[in-house]
Amino acid sequence: MYVYLLIIILFPPMRGYIFIRHGESNINVEKVLSDDVDHNTLTDTGEKQAERTGEQLTGLKFDGIISSPIKRAYDTANIISNYVGLDVKIDDRLREVYLGNANGHNINEFLDTLYPNSHITGKVRDSLGMETWEHLQERVKACMDEYKGKYIFVSHSDPIRAIASYYMGLSEGESFGMAIKNASMTVIARSPLKLLSLGAINLDDKIKSIFS
Ligand SMILES: O=C(O)[C@@H](CO)OP(=O)(O)O
Picture: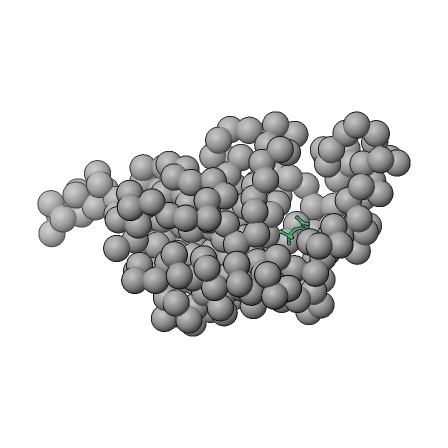
């Protein structure tokens, strides 16, 4: 018994997380930011993207599929759930960054007027009443800390960029150019910690072996 416990302590079981950004949504086409839960749908392209990502995951084994409650992500998760045979569980910690006064607006309205040649940094977030980058990182990490196993997390661009930059040791500004494509897969292993893919649309065999 004690030997078993020692082995578990010394060699904790591998945990793996496949973060998937939802498929293309109408707001992505319109370049509008939205943290509304029930509106914005997937476009036909977004549905096809979700199907394709689901195909990539067919045959892999997971302990669960956890989704943002926001429709574009939840609909993506339900499409993917058909390929992995799991019911979707909603977790608010995977939702889009709280946008404050930026909600419903085009991102460029702020960058061009408020802060020319800038990007969404702490002062921009504060001035718009947005969730801080640090809080976003903390809530996504708390979600990972709760689900100790191999999971699919369906979320949004900023939450995925936030957790990837957290593990890469990059600030919000330093990771601003990180483009997380629709329906792409960002894979993080824990124990040992490793960022295995960033915005990938295919999974290589090395990654698939973790989830087999
Ligand atoms: O990147 C965006 O345009 C925002 C929209 O709020 O995030 P996502 O599309 O990932 O939900």
